[in-house]
Length: 103
Image (cartoon, rainbow, N blue to C red; front, side):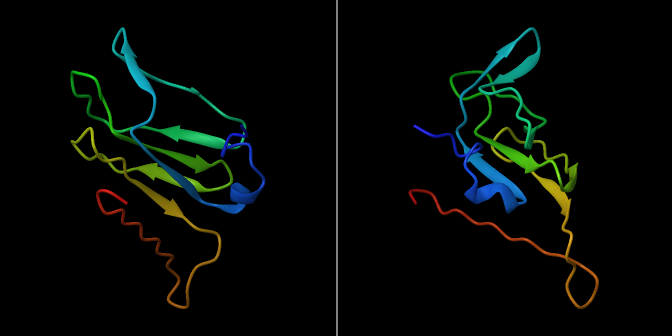
């Protein structure tokens, strides 16, 4: 099976949003599989919950993008501000993502 992160199709994507990633905690650090990638920067929530799902979201940001973590005190939500290379007519860039439960 080919990894989405290694696939050529999303190479122009700004962000990959991962729901319920494979993750565990060791000596106070969040460990994920994989921990890093040559094309993507790993971003995890600032909060950790005890139990099976320590975090329930993570982002992989394209290394060609400028991104800054937005601190949200939840283990369920990962947020970043991404500066996209092609701004809109007003000089800003906007990106929206919504995933309804069960979809």
